[in-house]
Image 1 (cartoon, rainbow, N blue to C red):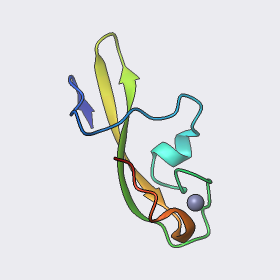
Image 2 (cartoon, rainbow, N blue to C red; image 1 turned 135 degrees about the vertical axis):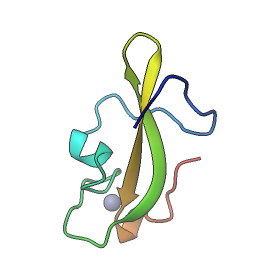
Image 3 (cartoon, rainbow, N blue to C red; image 1 turned 60 degrees about the horizontal axis):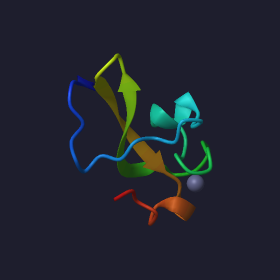
Length: 69
Ligand SMILES: [Zn+2]
């Protein structure tokens, strides 16, 4: 999903975060893939000159309570 403006409640992703974490295939915080992953909100990354891309991230049980926002 590509949007031209960032919703004010969606924080930017860490610049060094792994792409698999942005794709929701691993815990956004620790990278766990063999846990029960649950939706944990969304983050944005720059896309083009002025746009942003919104990613829906997931969290493992240990980080489930560490939602963004
Ligand atoms: Zn985790």
